Image (cartoon, rainbow, N blue to C red; front, side):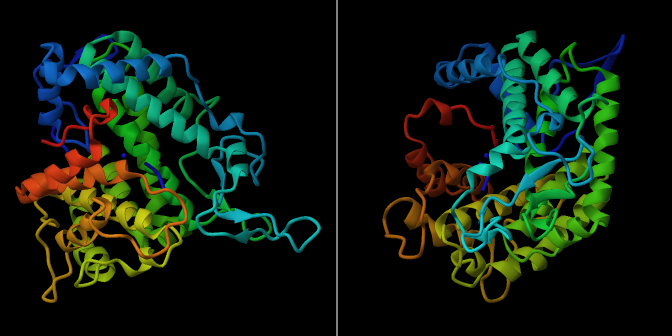
Length: 399
């Protein structure tokens, strides 16, 4: 599992730089752009409520300034095709076979991550996207050009520069040694790109991000969207009946909006009512396919994070997933209410959870629910989980 709305933005053409109008909200998708703009006003005005969070953000951004750049060409092991620009990763829960001399074929141990995965591209991909977003957010809230400059370098190196760019596909993601050279489930690892498109929206006002950069990145995403929709790997992931299918929709809708195809994005979200919500959530709010996992609470919240994010993506497109409910009660709110007493410690989780559950993973779904349903109980629950952690005081603004 991994960790963590659209509005048009006017721009001025100055030389080869995209210069955003100061009062316009950024073009971001994981947050409400107006809330992001309001957060910048508070930060620039040194609002005491933003001080602790902003201080923590700057500390993280200063660390990120010393990182990278990263590239798929830096991997330790070659691609099955021999092309160093292919993204390669191992299925995280597969380990060497103890019953064979060469360890092949690898065997599955659900919930146990094989440290061998760090020798491929997944770790650098995650680090790159996280650092790019942190730097971009720090630039947007402080105006420090150094943050934007390094964010742009990270993005160009991973996705644009012909010498270092990643090919626009995940054909060889989550491969299982001795079994295959990639799987549809690997599409989930492209969720790192959600941070990428938001980072671009946040550094648009910087002299470090040019029109050429913007055009090149959109071209990359057009190819990637085509691969997601037409390749066997992409179609397999689209057909997934668990969290993989929902995260596929979150990604596809976001990238479609990034390249300007709102009509297709709207269709994907509309279909999610029956294909994701009605089929995955039971009337009592439980999600059977997530409960079957060895980290069942973690995966339940992981899927809930995807569903609530998809619901927010539907708002500006005029599709209401938040209040969609089947006649027998299957809906997002039922799923939130199902898990709430467990994440708050009011009930003991009796199903398998073989690793430590991360409380922070439930904060965004609860905050999104508080806004969507105008219900303070969700906001209070999110606040209780976040506590006084400065890292949680300046999250993606949602309203």
